[in-house]
Amino acid sequence: MDTIVIPGICGQIGSALAKKLNDDWMVIGFDLHHPDAECRIDALDADAVRSFLIRQRNVVAVVNCLGDSNTADSLSFASILDVRKDDFVSMLNNNLVSAFIVMQEYIRVFGKAQGNIINIASLYSTVSPNPKIYDGTIKHPGYVASKFGLVGLTKYMAVLAAEYNIKINCVSPGAVLGTKGVSDEFLKKYNSLVPMEDGVEIDDVYQVVDMLCKNKKITGQNIVIDGGYGLW
Picture 1 (cartoon, rainbow, N blue to C red):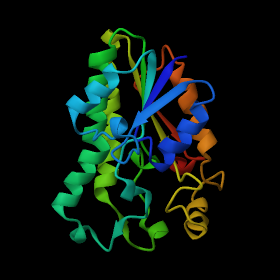
Picture 2 (picture 1 turned 30 degrees about the vertical axis):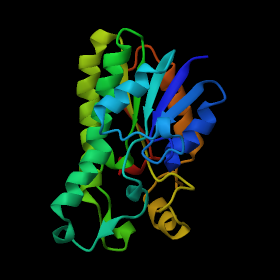
Picture 3 (picture 1 turned 60 degrees about the vertical axis):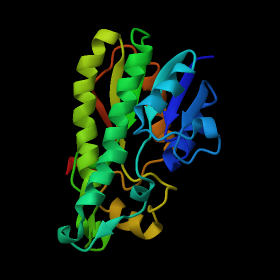
Picture 4 (picture 1 turned 180 degrees about the horizontal axis):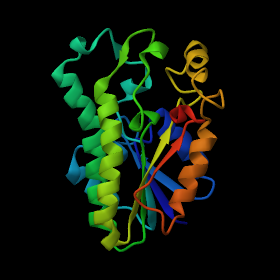
């Protein structure tokens, strides 16, 4: 059976996708908080990521669900003046630098294998958060910078990975129902800005990820699943 690797498999979206993908694929992943010591890997450690990938067989795709778990909360600040540089840098490391390392090591280990990399980004890879749905506070600017950066990096890496026969794409969901921080109160405000007036089911994300895992020609794209939020 072909294998899918999920970095960040212990996170909310990573664990949910693993359960769904496991019906058709062998799913394995790593995470800094993984209960299995062999899979307890910091994605910022390139040597550890490479060693993990080398141990796998028949890998057809990597689904990057990496990120700071705090971003699943409505992590926000009273104003831009409250954001510390160290917090901003940490967010970039956890959400963007780690993804680069995984992409680089996947290409190094599985080049010419007709593989796929799917980076899970966010609605906020295409639009700015609206402070009105965050009770007048601001969402972490490092989160937004990292998600916009992930789309740009995906496009550039897709060009460079083409010679290795590897496709790289992004999936950018809006508010994912059932995840931490997506409360009923938040959804009421969020849905008022969505033409389809609803959040995103994890199954919506899964269907796109599953399609991209089987993909042979799509590369460098950012597929946004937002019910039309970004249209107006």
